[in-house]
Image (cartoon, rainbow, N blue to C red; front, top):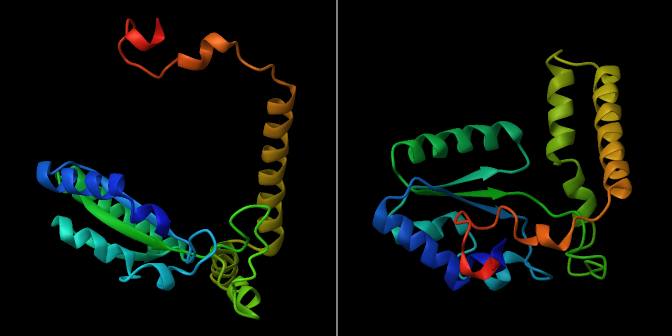
Length: 183
């Protein structure tokens, strides 16, 4: 998210990781927009992965519209982390809807949204699976239906579940059982 990458806390975390060679992968999901402004209008360097070079760590870019690109990039960066090397990965994707329900997304160019829909990662993966004979259309529909059913079941469970007790507010927050803020 471009607006978060400019915040001090993020940059401080990159700096500390660089100083102490922390085994961490910083992943920036760049969906092309801040709340309502295109990245290239709010960042002097819109290639966000390049921001990590100031902290002496390897940085790269993956296409969030290609599951294979993301898979390879994450594997490569995790391998670096396992060697004690911090790194930064920008996953460039696209936000199809406004930032919130009150955002009509009128900042997009005419026809931009329609042009981007054919690049969607799920659409591209389905096309790949079919073109390579891995799955047929009916099998993809079965998977899609099963996923939708799982989501609907989870919604039902959430709707039917009671709210937790207020005492649960501090559960699993502090490692130290006698931490003063939970007394």
